[in-house]
Amino acid sequence: GGTKIIVANDSSGVVRSPVLADDGLTLYYRRWNTKASQLSLVARDLSTGAERVISCCGTGAFALSPDGQSVAFVNRGGGAFATSPTSIQIIPTAGGASRTVYMESIPTEAIQDGGGVKWSKDGRQLLFVRMGGDVMVVPAAGGTPRKILGPDAGYGLHLHADGRRIMYTAGNYKSEVWVMENLDAPGTGGTNK
Image (tube, rainbow, N blue to C red; front, top):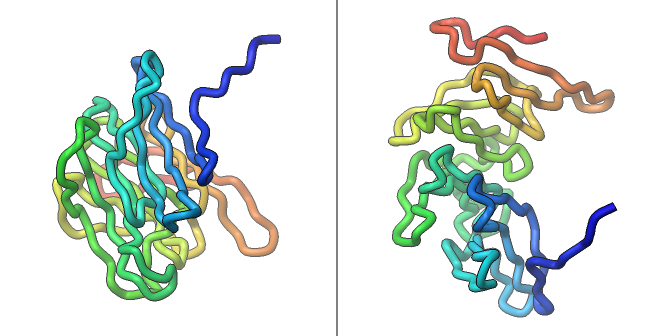
């Protein structure tokens, strides 16, 4: 049952990766404009239908912060996937300038768009996946990331609501779904199951 309602569409492009704010009033999504060859992050007010572009030009996977005040996203730098520097950026949901949390200029260590970027439950850290499958964590304030899993450990990264477990897929030919528990246990890097 239920009624289907289109809340966002674009005749000149593709709408992807919808995320609904906890208050249920704002929908965030990526829009690929085929005419302009541009990928943007858009916020749509569901009560009025008004849209505003939060970020444009290279916006990849994104995640809404736990407090709903910021969006973290993978930035491709506008260039070719295999050769562009990639970065993790944070931008206020109200709009404004983004800031770089971490930048990776080595193509083989590029940040995976498919792996995504995830906020820790307390909003102080971001998790992401490098091309080789290393799952990394970096302070949201910026700094040096540290590896918590890898290699070939990460794709489809998801953080459990309790903030102590992550799920990810692993493997090249026979994929498996894994859960890492005790994510914030000091000095352990967690426990794989």
